[in-house]
Image 1 (tube, rainbow, N blue to C red):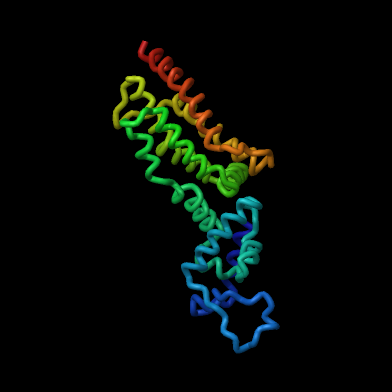
Image 2 (cartoon, rainbow, N blue to C red):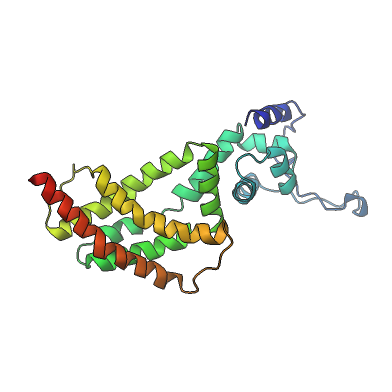
Length: 250
């Protein structure tokens, strides 16, 4: 990371055009064959930023966070100094990648799905986890999360906390309500309950690991596989939570 940071800062010393769009042009692949008078299409700032983010997601998913920003800039087809105009350093770029892949992709409708008690709990869980699997079992999602963990990035800890707040706590509360166990707005799930619910997340995530890391075959009907896993989860975890709750009361 320090090596990349030094190179990033070195890029700042290069001459930066005063017009932000000057160096954001799409240059022809073979400039020698193009007339000098032919205008080059300028890329709007928002368009360039989107291009950098999208390419950074693909780049880090492929090579990990140890990938050099110089190579990322080369793939995009811009000078490294251009990246600096959008992100102060590599850490800032990685943070944006995290937000794009793991946070902004979250569908608020999933919260409503889990908490809609007019629908049987099993149906809610199946609907949620089937949709969730479509979001997480992707090349970028799986590999970026694994690379972040291997490199010791803070992203994984933050993501686990995010999932605990947005999903695990809701699922446990809905299971407890379905069992007639006490729960209120201030209820904090126990470590045991969290581990039980985390099992279904890990089970679904492993499907992506098999495909995008191990290169193994993938089920043709993903929705059916996820539904079966949720049913197995539903048949076992609520019973464990009920038994554990009874033991603590005693």
